[in-house]
Amino acid sequence: MGVVVTDEPKSVSFTRRGVLGAFAATAITAAPTFSNAAGFLRGSGNIRRLHMYSGRTGETLNTIYWIDDKYIDEAVHEISLFMRDWRANSVKTIDHRTLDIMAASHNVMDVSEPYIMLSGYRSKATNDMLRRRSRGVARNSLHMKGQAADLRLKSRSVSQMARAALSCRAGGVGKYRNANFVHMDCGDIRSWSR
Image 1: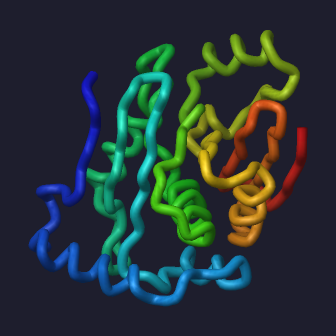
Image 2: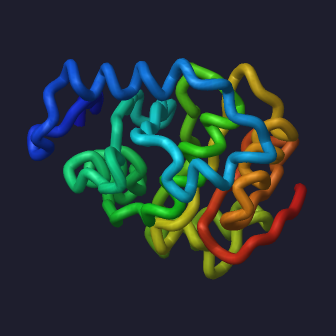
Protein backbone atom coordinates (compact mmCIF):
# COMPACT_ATOMS: atom_id res chain seq x y z
CA MET A 1 0.00 0.00 0.00
CA GLY A 2 1.32 3.46 -0.88
CA VAL A 3 1.10 6.77 0.87
CA VAL A 4 -2.39 7.86 1.86
CA VAL A 5 -2.96 11.59 1.46
CA THR A 6 -6.29 13.32 1.18
CA ASP A 7 -7.58 16.84 1.53
CA GLU A 8 -11.19 16.53 0.48
CA PRO A 9 -13.16 13.35 -0.24
CA LYS A 10 -15.11 13.26 -3.50
CA SER A 11 -18.36 12.34 -1.73
CA VAL A 12 -18.62 15.82 -0.20
CA SER A 13 -20.25 18.56 -2.23
CA PHE A 14 -17.92 21.34 -1.07
CA THR A 15 -15.47 23.09 -3.33
CA ARG A 16 -11.79 22.91 -2.46
CA ARG A 17 -11.68 26.71 -2.25
CA GLY A 18 -14.64 26.70 0.16
CA VAL A 19 -13.07 24.06 2.38
CA LEU A 20 -9.72 25.85 2.44
CA GLY A 21 -11.45 29.15 3.15
CA ALA A 22 -13.38 27.64 6.03
CA PHE A 23 -10.22 26.05 7.40
CA ALA A 24 -8.34 29.34 7.12
CA ALA A 25 -11.15 31.10 8.98
CA THR A 26 -10.93 28.65 11.88
CA ALA A 27 -7.12 28.67 11.85
CA ILE A 28 -6.90 32.42 12.52
CA THR A 29 -8.95 32.24 15.70
CA ALA A 30 -7.10 32.37 18.98
CA ALA A 31 -5.17 29.23 19.82
CA PRO A 32 -7.21 26.99 22.12
CA THR A 33 -6.17 26.51 25.71
CA PHE A 34 -6.34 23.43 27.91
CA SER A 35 -9.42 24.87 29.63
CA ASN A 36 -11.55 25.03 26.48
CA ALA A 37 -10.55 21.80 24.74
CA ALA A 38 -13.90 20.17 25.51
CA GLY A 39 -15.56 22.79 23.30
CA PHE A 40 -13.79 21.32 20.29
CA LEU A 41 -15.36 17.95 21.01
CA ARG A 42 -18.82 19.51 21.14
CA GLY A 43 -18.43 21.01 17.69
CA SER A 44 -17.23 24.55 18.34
CA GLY A 45 -15.16 24.39 15.16
CA ASN A 46 -16.38 23.95 11.59
CA ILE A 47 -13.66 21.53 10.58
CA ARG A 48 -11.86 18.64 12.22
CA ARG A 49 -8.61 17.39 10.74
CA LEU A 50 -6.12 14.64 11.47
CA HIS A 51 -2.52 14.69 10.32
CA MET A 52 -0.48 11.55 11.04
CA TYR A 53 2.59 9.66 9.97
CA SER A 54 3.24 5.93 10.45
CA GLY A 55 6.88 4.91 10.71
CA ARG A 56 5.76 1.28 10.50
CA THR A 57 4.31 1.64 7.00
CA GLY A 58 5.86 4.93 5.82
CA GLU A 59 2.38 6.31 5.14
CA THR A 60 1.20 9.84 5.78
CA LEU A 61 -2.39 10.96 6.26
CA ASN A 62 -3.64 14.53 6.28
CA THR A 63 -7.40 14.72 6.03
CA ILE A 64 -10.44 16.70 7.04
CA TYR A 65 -12.86 14.12 8.43
CA TRP A 66 -15.63 16.35 9.83
CA ILE A 67 -17.26 19.43 8.35
CA ASP A 68 -20.31 21.39 9.49
CA ASP A 69 -21.47 18.86 12.10
CA LYS A 70 -21.03 15.84 9.79
CA TYR A 71 -18.45 13.09 9.64
CA ILE A 72 -17.18 12.44 6.12
CA ASP A 73 -17.52 8.68 5.62
CA GLU A 74 -14.78 8.43 2.99
CA ALA A 75 -12.31 10.28 5.22
CA VAL A 76 -13.18 8.15 8.26
CA HIS A 77 -12.61 5.07 6.10
CA GLU A 78 -9.19 6.40 5.02
CA ILE A 79 -8.26 7.08 8.65
CA SER A 80 -9.36 3.56 9.61
CA LEU A 81 -7.27 2.12 6.77
CA PHE A 82 -4.30 4.20 7.91
CA MET A 83 -4.75 3.06 11.54
CA ARG A 84 -5.10 -0.62 10.57
CA ASP A 85 -3.26 -3.47 12.24
CA TRP A 86 -0.31 -3.45 9.86
CA ARG A 87 0.96 -6.79 11.15
CA ALA A 88 -2.24 -8.61 10.20
CA ASN A 89 -3.27 -6.10 7.48
CA SER A 90 -6.64 -5.97 9.23
CA VAL A 91 -8.91 -2.90 9.26
CA LYS A 92 -11.58 -1.87 11.77
CA THR A 93 -13.51 1.39 11.72
CA ILE A 94 -11.95 3.73 14.27
CA ASP A 95 -14.47 5.11 16.75
CA HIS A 96 -15.37 8.72 15.93
CA ARG A 97 -14.92 9.69 19.57
CA THR A 98 -11.27 8.62 19.46
CA LEU A 99 -10.73 10.65 16.30
CA ASP A 100 -12.24 13.69 18.02
CA ILE A 101 -10.03 13.30 21.10
CA MET A 102 -6.95 13.03 18.88
CA ALA A 103 -7.95 16.08 16.81
CA ALA A 104 -8.91 18.19 19.84
CA SER A 105 -5.65 17.33 21.61
CA HIS A 106 -3.67 18.29 18.51
CA ASN A 107 -5.53 21.63 18.36
CA VAL A 108 -4.93 22.29 22.05
CA MET A 109 -1.19 21.85 21.59
CA ASP A 110 -1.27 24.28 18.64
CA VAL A 111 1.15 22.25 16.50
CA SER A 112 1.29 21.75 12.76
CA GLU A 113 3.48 18.64 12.74
CA PRO A 114 1.77 15.29 12.26
CA TYR A 115 1.23 12.81 15.03
CA ILE A 116 3.56 9.84 14.79
CA MET A 117 1.17 6.92 15.15
CA LEU A 118 2.65 3.87 16.84
CA SER A 119 -0.52 1.83 17.21
CA GLY A 120 -4.14 2.18 16.21
CA TYR A 121 -6.41 -0.84 15.70
CA ARG A 122 -5.00 -4.19 16.83
CA SER A 123 -6.36 -7.61 16.04
CA LYS A 124 -6.68 -10.02 18.97
CA ALA A 125 -3.71 -12.00 17.64
CA THR A 126 -1.52 -8.88 17.53
CA ASN A 127 -2.68 -7.77 20.98
CA ASP A 128 -1.94 -11.22 22.42
CA MET A 129 1.53 -11.20 20.85
CA LEU A 130 2.26 -7.73 22.30
CA ARG A 131 0.99 -8.87 25.74
CA ARG A 132 3.54 -11.68 25.72
CA ARG A 133 6.29 -9.09 25.09
CA SER A 134 5.15 -6.36 27.48
CA ARG A 135 3.24 -6.20 30.73
CA GLY A 136 1.85 -2.78 29.70
CA VAL A 137 -0.56 -4.23 27.12
CA ALA A 138 -4.11 -4.79 28.40
CA ARG A 139 -5.85 -8.13 27.81
CA ASN A 140 -9.04 -6.37 26.68
CA SER A 141 -7.32 -3.40 25.07
CA LEU A 142 -9.54 -0.77 23.47
CA HIS A 143 -7.15 -0.96 20.51
CA MET A 144 -8.98 -4.20 19.59
CA LYS A 145 -12.26 -2.26 19.34
CA GLY A 146 -10.81 0.57 17.24
CA GLN A 147 -11.15 2.92 20.20
CA ALA A 148 -7.52 3.78 21.00
CA ALA A 149 -4.32 5.19 19.55
CA ASP A 150 -0.72 5.42 20.74
CA LEU A 151 0.84 8.66 19.52
CA ARG A 152 3.89 10.87 19.83
CA LEU A 153 4.99 14.30 18.65
CA LYS A 154 8.58 15.39 18.13
CA SER A 155 7.97 18.89 19.46
CA ARG A 156 5.94 17.99 22.57
CA SER A 157 6.78 15.94 25.63
CA VAL A 158 4.73 13.02 26.86
CA SER A 159 3.51 15.23 29.72
CA GLN A 160 2.40 18.01 27.36
CA MET A 161 0.55 15.56 25.13
CA ALA A 162 -1.10 13.86 28.10
CA ARG A 163 -2.25 17.20 29.55
CA ALA A 164 -3.81 18.12 26.21
CA ALA A 165 -5.65 14.79 25.98
CA LEU A 166 -6.75 14.96 29.63
CA SER A 167 -8.17 18.43 29.07
CA CYS A 168 -10.72 16.90 26.71
CA ARG A 169 -12.23 14.95 29.63
CA ALA A 170 -13.41 12.39 27.13
CA GLY A 171 -11.55 9.11 27.68
CA GLY A 172 -8.46 7.34 28.90
CA VAL A 173 -4.98 8.83 28.75
CA GLY A 174 -1.83 6.85 29.43
CA LYS A 175 1.67 8.30 29.69
CA TYR A 176 4.43 5.95 28.59
CA ARG A 177 7.54 8.01 29.33
CA ASN A 178 10.18 5.35 28.62
CA ALA A 179 8.65 4.53 25.24
CA ASN A 180 7.90 8.24 24.56
CA PHE A 181 4.22 8.02 23.61
CA VAL A 182 0.74 8.82 24.88
CA HIS A 183 -2.21 6.46 24.70
CA MET A 184 -5.57 8.13 23.95
CA ASP A 185 -8.88 6.28 23.96
CA CYS A 186 -12.62 6.95 24.14
CA GLY A 187 -13.28 4.61 27.07
CA ASP A 188 -13.96 5.65 30.65
CA ILE A 189 -12.25 8.82 31.84
CA ARG A 190 -9.08 7.69 33.61
CA SER A 191 -5.31 8.21 33.46
CA TRP A 192 -2.17 6.25 34.26
CA SER A 193 1.56 6.49 33.88
CA ARG A 194 4.19 3.84 33.11
